[in-house]
Image (cartoon, rainbow, N blue to C red; front, side, top):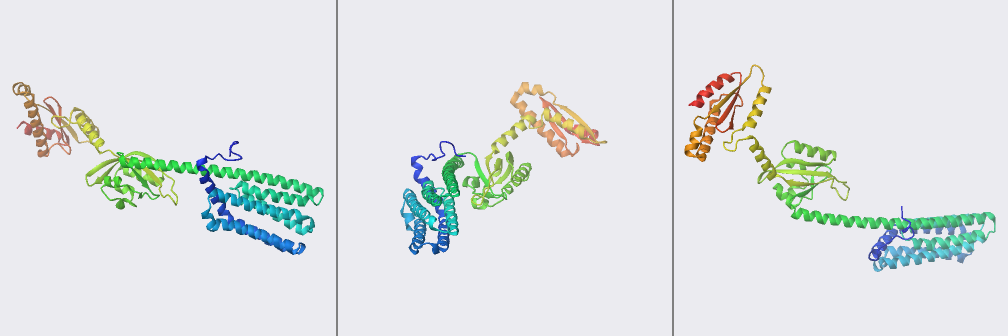
Length: 445
């Protein structure tokens, strides 16, 4: 709806007046050809039906008036004249054309109506009303031009009707004025709606340009990069930074399936599913094989509305989280492995022991060996802690190598450091107890 304040003239900033006028003229230009054809058709019907009841000069004058007015309007929009004139002068020329044809046709209606027969009057009235309605539609973006045609034609037809001096003719004149008034109001409303729409479109386009500039700046200087996909999940408009991060050339990636970049995994499956179902996703971690080795990417995206002019159906952001993943891996390793020897610590040992006890199947058994280094305190006291640490690392390495080389302890024997000079070994299987005894003998050697 148009606001009360804008109903009779949309508010247009002075600096935008020429741009808006150009849009108004262009919108009318698209309607000129059917308008001219309709005007000439009306002229032909009038000449054919009224020619026998009018003087020859009047018929020629009527036809000439319609042909000249239609030719002038067509010449303005199709010839060199349109390129030569600015929008304001074009609007003025359209107004002059409308008032010229409107006054001429209105005068003809007022003068001819009383002398015509009933059938000819009906044709003239229908022709006039048709032209009034057509002008309200085809010239709606130029409301003053429409009014300058509608008003004189309405007045001329009403005068012709009232010349009949009958109650029916007077009622028809009142209805004609009411209908013309409503059409004029609708023309101004349509004009204001059109102006409001083109101003909104201009603002939206300006916002889109601003957003694109910001995105380009982000793409060029940010630590992340953007991606765009079509309806089939193929990459579009791949930037140089994106291609460099993927270790390929942009032309190699354009049209390439997006999910094919990633190693198989839940993140890749989720992304492929969301792109297929056109649903948003976020923080999906995937592995990408590049020329620099494997990289971790975190990806988020949401659907876009693709069209013939813009095939982009999905947009999103990619962030390289390789360093974060490496840090998380180090933290996880520190939480489960002894920092001195690299063996599993007490926490991982407890978890592994509980898991093997819970998952074992009869007749499988689990055996636990606790190993303590004799006289370790004396080593620390005599040679110092650095030597003691080296001694523990050597003990851990020999224990792990001995267990691995023995082939004993089932499918997954575990050597762990519980703390200080305390170590433990978990062995499993049907012969777990025998394996533990044999391993103890090997470790003592």
